[in-house]
Amino acid sequence: MIVAMKKGATGDQVTTVVQTIQQFGYRVGSIEGEEETVIGAIGLGDVTACLEAVGPLPGVMRAVRISTPFKQVSLTFRPVRTVVKVGDVSIGGEELVVMAGPCAVENEEQIMAAAEAVKKAGAKILRGGAFKPRSSPYSFQGLGFEGLQLLHKARELTGLSIVTEVMSAMHVDLVSNMADIVQVGARNMRNYELLKELGRCRKPVLLKRAPDASITDLLLSAEYIVEHGNSDVILCERGIVTFDKEYTRNTCDICSISVLKDLTHLPVILDPSHACGRRKLVPGLARAGVAMGVDGLIIEVHPEPRKALSDGSQSLDFPQFSKLMTSLGSLREVWQESRREFNGTSHLVALA
Ligand code: PEP
Ligand code: MN
Image 1: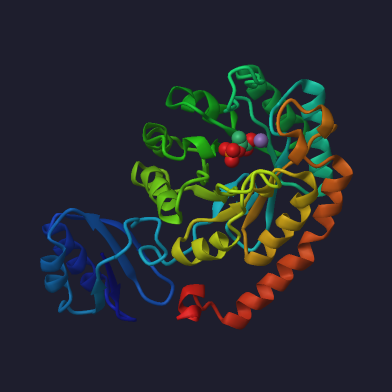
Image 2: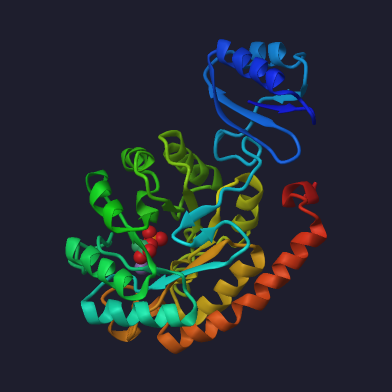
């Protein structure tokens, strides 16, 4: 439930509300708000009785139940956008943050070349898988710990922060010690033990949407991480199942970006590479994501895509990536301008 206090409500009035909420078996998850204080409470108490008790208290403007199954990640629950800080980069603020690099770390030469090239083009974070979730056990599985060490070296060389995937709860400490952002791949979005473990880790989590997951499913997975103690979660749209495998790998649910930004305070990024699976489509999709209001992009870039050990067909080469980067800034401005026109109106409200 949320309790919105009137403008100018006193600290004592807020305290009384909090104590009343607690008496009904609820826990206060957040107290925030720019103009008015909004108290977000979670628990399994008698919500009707609690609302009846809190509603008439002095200083309370309204007390309402949150109707969505996800609570703490909801923008209603916490009406202040989460900005995830990684070094001197902020994800979820004004800046569009680009993460780029190969699908998998293959060897030292490859990852160092990719790191230098994506940095030069303006990327702020280096991606690269060390533990790779592959459909076939006979495909390249990643370099594992050696891959993490190479990423670490690339960070030392370039100063770029690192995002890399963790596939097992057993590896959370290992990966989070070496990475700046820990990625949960689409296949693991519903690995709840992994999500709980990531709740206990102190690094931001990039959570990818499973191809068959609804927006609610994605937000509930994020809720697991937040509920277990880690509120630095970045959501990632990466395409959902398509019936037309002949031409694209997935269907990019481009509208999910705008919908998510209305539903949650968490940052939202797009992975145009996995969303379409074809190099030629990646730049257009990346730009579409920016026009739709993403907080960032994660893009596969390889020194020689045709020789890549995984996902070469959707990887950009260095010139393609740097060309794409030069086109993003103006689109971001277009989006910022249109956001001002709507004057912060929620897309769902605007539709109603
Ligand atoms: C990846 O980022 O290389 C990857 C495996 O992505 P996804 O989990 O979205 O398939
Ligand atoms: Mn990949």
